[in-house]
Image: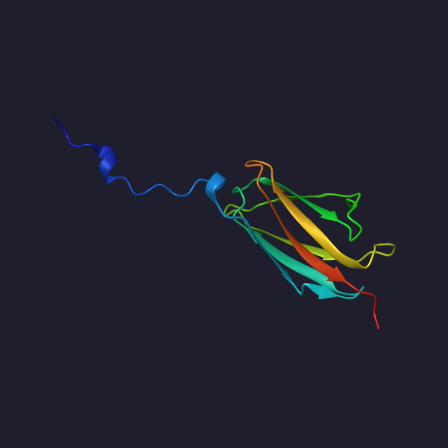
Length: 113
């Protein structure tokens, strides 16, 4: 019998469903002029992601933001206070549409001065 060609194949890569979603934000607190810059990784390569927010009072922010991960499953994001937004700790949530996995981070916005 011939050799098994599968035995010479390299190990399989980790499927996107098994990836660990990672989010960073810098800084994690600031005032109304602060631009919170973040990076995300571990999402489905070239996949759709929705970024949403929960206000400090627990209510959902009325707008969601679509993102697309790059070929490595990564993307950048940012958040900035808008007039009328509540001061306090916000939860920013990220949904990978392909896997259904979510992760989140928090940032705190305070009034200047």
